[in-house]
Image (cartoon, rainbow, N blue to C red; front, side):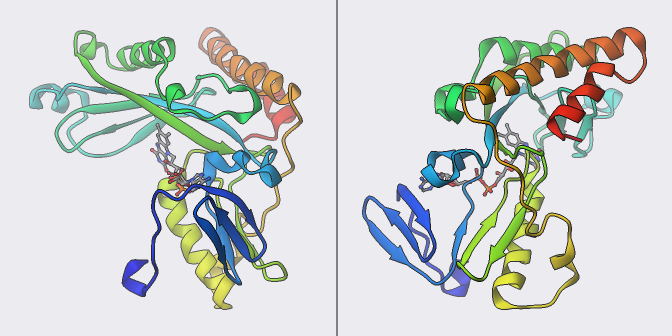
Length: 259
Ligand SMILES: Cc1cc2nc3c(=O)[nH]c(=O)nc-3n(C[C@H](O)[C@H](O)[C@H](O)COP(=O)(O)OP(=O)(O)OC[C@H]3O[C@@H](n4cnc5c(N)ncnc54)[C@H](O)[C@@H]3O)c2cc1C
């Protein structure tokens, strides 16, 4: 962005975003186009309280694994992988031979609260480490050296979006429902097209100008999201026991619209 003449103002706490303006404690910026790219932090703005629910994803990292062990486990390339269980998990070997292993399951916090103290959770990190060891029994004695996490922006229908309203000059990039590393790049290219009027087949993707329904008001949102997280965990137990697609999961998909 800076290569193209843009200026980035860091440490600027924005208090309000609206058509033609961005207000911060330090002053107000006016612009014909305003892009909101605030992902999990979106509900902090009064106008967007019910647009997304911040859900937490937590990860652990092992100490560097010996080369022979990595080869035995098929962890000697940088290929990322995940498992389509209901309470999603994912993993990625690092360049220095650690395994980073993550998953969902941390609770949703009342009124969409986001705080650095939610980035770690002793119980959930222990559960994620346990799942990693169930996947790779050979890692039973390997030390977990790092534990961290952060919030994801999840809309009511679990559908990512990017869009632009020329009438108001308001654009948005995300939420990405936890898959924003590549999708935020895609969103940037789509917004370039939409804002400058450039025709491109990317502009016809289903995520473009997709309008998700709003989340319920509290305390229904808190009750619903946390009940959903527990149901997803129960669905995994059900599938493990029955070896068949979970009935709880099918019901959950109907209720949440998640897929
Ligand atoms: C533990 C974890 C693992 C993940 N793993 C993956 C993965 O493997 N693959 C993948 O694709 N995605 C993954 N994600 C999701 C991915 O990190 C996000 O989708 C992506 O970072 C979103 O990018 P973004 O720029 O839209 O939002 P963010 O990176 O969240 O940036 C939002 C920015 O807005 C700023 N901001 C918020 N409020 C204000 C305010 N009031 N004033 C000023 N600035 C503000 C924040 O400081 C922040 O810099 C993971 C996320 C977590 C937490």
